[in-house]
Length: 373
Image (cartoon, rainbow, N blue to C red; front, side):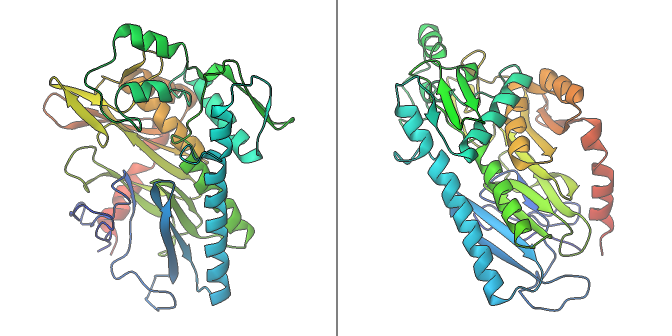
């Protein structure tokens, strides 16, 4: 029987499709681990040796598992490249650092082109492309509205913002007001008050950067997880695709709703069930619809997206969550995205709606889970 390790960062392990669960930072995707996971150099029939590197980053955690027998100098090299890439993303995109590129761009009232690193430009451009394709479902300038609803550094407010306050804040945001010039290496904003916040896409980008560095160092089989945004490369420790679980989006914590096989792809999940509060009996989600300035109010609990990069999976999961179960699914079908929508029903259960690209992955994954020795 295959199993997932007990959650490392809280929660309880539960049995499903006779597997146990391993959660990363209470997020929505897990790697399926073999029972008695081998230490580096250990010999187990059918299981390749591997080593896991883990630590804190960007207010969350990372975990990178590399398959193979690694010499001491290889281990040090992997640790160094992971540290270097995460530090560089933090230097470019952390809004908690006043000296980061993004903080300096946000603080500037200058409308002239702002010199920026290639990494920051690529992430903002990727976000812009998703914003345009989704009709504004993703908007990395929406921070003032998030704060107004009590999810910013200032915490909860005494009450909901008025419509007048929402309208005033909406005039200060808008993804179309930020421009990227990759050739010139600059960012530009149309209005001085526009600011960027990239938490909906930066962890996925960090996973992509680590992936490229590991491949450049000659490693082909590994799984990268940065804050729950996961990118798989090559075969898993058991051979074949990596088996990843998608969490049931409720307060039970740690129950797998679905399983997918992932190889040379990324998986990201976005949902409203971890960060919310109730006000006057109404659920207030941290996910703000930039088109209305209000928290989402539809029945969609979570969206999981498989894509070629973790940045795209990360950004699209957020955009589809904002769009909701009907508009989001219609767009995912139109764009042929691999996406799973978990929608709350009146009975408190979850209705699964998936695109053909995603549905094609599930039967094989479930069979592998049920029949794995």
